Image 1 (tube, helix red, strand yellow):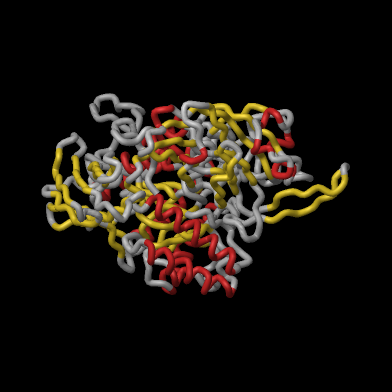
Image 2: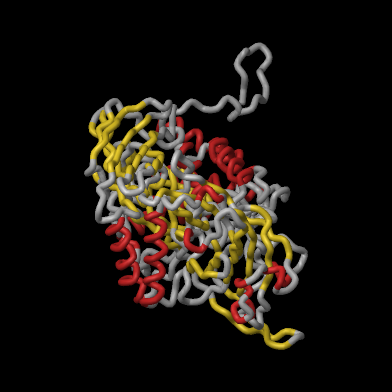
Length: 626
């Protein structure tokens, strides 16, 4: 699935803005369908409220019933389609970046799309349903209900209240189940004969890079053989390759003296991107389609002890994250996006995991451009009660994710789950099926998962290429006992490695920390305790690094985030080294010193001048002391 990009042949408009919004009563989720709210302006069906798109709807009002709503909601808005789009040779498409969890879309009262699984895009050609040069209406039904067969899983439970029985949503994952139209809504055009998909892989031989491509076209009739022109441009816009023929759907392009895509801090110019430009000329309609795809030339290899980028072993230093921010919830927010990447670079991180679902394509674009490596995770979290139906939806989520992100140089692994119940007997064959399916779709990246069970009971690591382990020594295990962290970490990982000869990553570790809470000596929840826990973990990681198969450390979490209400969560999960509004806790400065020290040791990176602030210079000695 190609992201909507403007070109000579493609117009792109966004329908972002303030839409009309109305909830269906929780006790009557079928009201909107029964009364056909989609067949008229939503304002004609009853009281509506304004709702921004993209955004989660939960935190935008002052009403508890909106924040905690379980079930169906409706959005609508009107829009004009230019008359010049109705040229007979054009197609018009509508694309949603993400609607959580399930969606139905009507154009002028006609059902045009249905999609299940949030955090992933879906689109449809809607040309025949539009009124050109006139007002049109789009209506969206959103259902946030999670079941045992959804990805992620949840369940509905009944509780007694003062008003009688009430159905509430229950789930085990530790983040708030935000709902709504979370990412941009695009209206865009293509010619009648158009480029439908691009699949790109790259490899390197000495100083020469290779771009292997395969194209898929849409709208081609049996009477035509479109002409394909392929160009490759460097980052300065200079042509490094150009070719035209009638059999150009598949090929291999040689790029002499190729500039490789390198991760942040592994090269002075990380995230180098070429432009892969395609021009499709159809004979019947006579209109070209032009599309430009960013391409990073790099290789990924893995052994039973390491992962290599361009032949060089990597050491991952990063975070698990969330798409989460004040007020907007999981809605795409460009200021937050830019701030997050500035903080990632400031702290010296080179990677993050899209815990626990695919992130917005706009975020992934930044990762490609900045050289931040990504472990790309599907929405399977706390998976249990395995079934054939769940397996198919799980595979569907990974299929959609891989089709979306297959061309991204920043994506270095596919994560097929977070903390599934891997001790269950059914987990073995279930995840064998999932991992096999991923490898059928993409053989160029390793398969991983974040595992929480003990090595002796786990049934899933055997099916992975790289094993991620989540451990909370000094927090959930032995809370407050700093002296247990290093040895427990080393012994735990050594036991895993003894059982499985694979590379290992500490995918999660950390401690909740309430920003501004200080204690001496350190005490749980204080900033001092978070820093001490990190230091003891670092000691264990450094001893493990010497063994040659421990390839990364990822803090949980980058920033504080919202969760469901529980007595163990004070305004959400506070394990971030940054607050929810993206300000540093004490541990952020501590982590920064480590991450840049690792970059200096492993990749020869020059330390930032402000890493060690001035303290004093001894009298009679011109050397500053830090």
